[in-house]
Amino acid sequence: MDLDLKNKRVLITAASRGLGFATARQLVREGAWVAINARNAGALTSAAEKLREEAAGEILTLPGDVTAPEFPTQAVSQVIAAWGGLDILITNAGGPPSGTFENQDDAAWQKAIDLCLMSHVRLIRAALPYLRQSTCPSVLTITSIAVKQPIANLVLSNSIRAATASLTKSLALELGSENIRFNSILPASTLTERILDLLSYRAGQNGTTVDEEMRKQAAESPFKRLATPEEFANAAVFLVSPAASYITGVMLTVDGGSYKATF
Image (cartoon, rainbow, N blue to C red; front, side):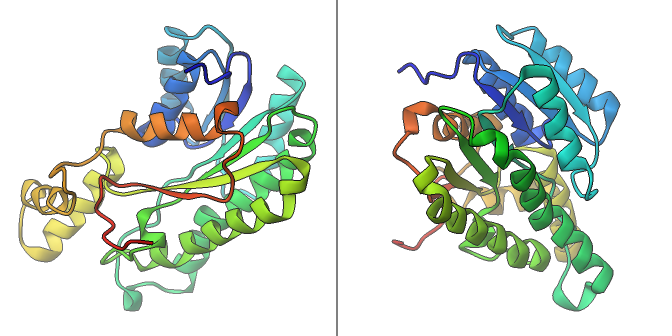
């Protein structure tokens, strides 16, 4: 299937590693022009070098912190200055720290809100005028399976990512008449640096090892394994592509069947 992504202009945040990088790589392989963001300028440069080895289109780097209120507008402005427009926005951010409810103070909640909700809000707000000018505008928010099925010791993520999912659905309804699509992917445990951090925390809490916690996590899926970043990226790239032109307002679980409910 031709996903019709050649020369489409994409901005994806938190893309120097993990799910963001895997998605950027698949977009590049489809011929898209991809602007990637990360806080660590060195890691971002390294990621861009890897992408350029496979790129048919252009790669743009946007170092900066998506939780800084002014950064989303700056990032979008740089993409517009370089390419004259924007077709696809993928809002991604790292997750907040592990911990129970009683371990999180007001500062931790505010940081998590800025990271897991307001970064999406500000990026979409900055991009919207340019998405309106695109012939195939699409927004993908990356959230978590925690939206549907809360995860132990992740009260911040469980609570705040649900707001981003509701934002995504609201915008799909509000802006569908303008042909702008909004979807979200809710990944479960995927083999990234983030999951290793979470499993390390669980191992410390449970007096086990990371390997034991990984086996327990893998057992949640009928496949008895965790996803690879590439498996997530394949779903993400299809969902943002013009090939998915009649799909909007979807909260897609990429979880290997670990979410047990019917709906």
